[in-house]
Image 1 (cartoon, helix red, strand yellow):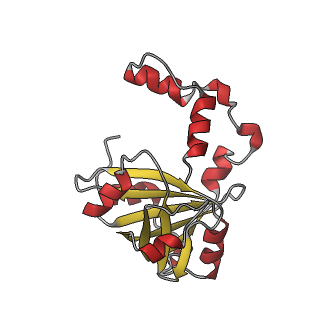
Image 2 (tube, rainbow, N blue to C red):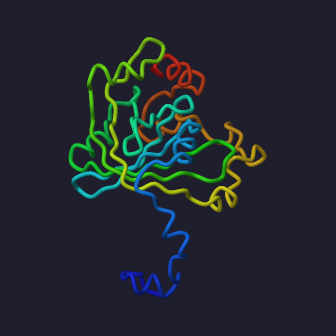
Image 3 (cartoon, rainbow, N blue to C red):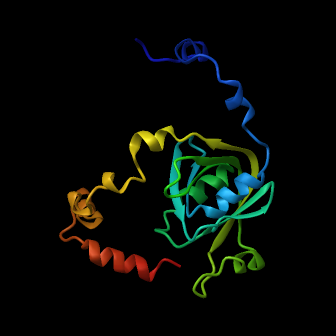
Length: 202
């Protein structure tokens, strides 16, 4: 079979979308989506740059760290990272974002698509102070689509099943992997890395 390059090719293999799947897309945050976001400590944030290259990054904090300002607006604080600014750079060129909210132990996820602007308003940053530290910026996301995603991926993967968790020592530490990838002389240990992370979470 050759590469599939047309919608007709795809539909010939997969068939039509079920009516419920078509109808489930909402234009704003409803009470169920609001509750889901409030329980979520982790969201995957996707963006796309001016060059058309896509990127996805995890954002996490205490459950409910993404605030529902109103049914059409989400607020997402930008905590300290590695200063690559991949997402923020993309948003300067293209404000479109996709978010996938996860709740550990819950196989369903929540998807939100919209457009984000980068804000540094002092009063907005003050709403997200943790341990006396405010984020550098906050993403203000105008919601365009909201819908629940079925549990099949998490059921197949067993992602939340502790019996499926990989013992951490089965992989080299991140420091060891980066040493090998970058040709460095030494490697930060896993313990050293975690201690450094803890000191700079906020």
